[in-house]
Image (tube, rainbow, N blue to C red; front, top):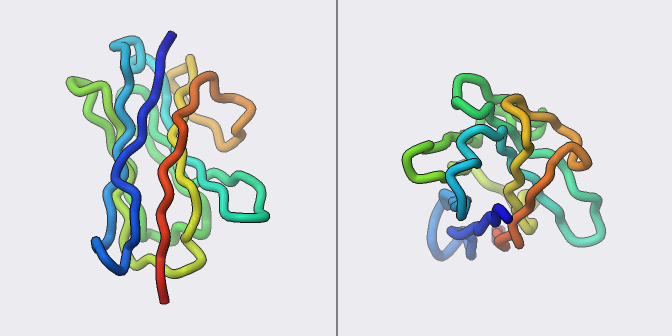
Length: 124
């Protein structure tokens, strides 16, 4: 069973703009699209961005507005979310997800595997 493990969260004011990492336990993830979602307290989970299995396509939610970049390293079975220009509104638990198809979706229901999430807290 494929597992996803996120890391890199924390307090932005202390550690600066984070790069979140998502490590997969199996090489099969190379065939899967991956995405990042986030969920703030009392909010629904929302799509942040996604990347195709071979990394040639990516897309982001409107609120990202050019501030985040998703990438992946197939040799390491990993995906990343580089964040910048964060505001307190970006405070949330960020989770990565993998879909058993090469192209991503903005719908959480379309993903088959999920990480446990990593907290990102942005102080004003």
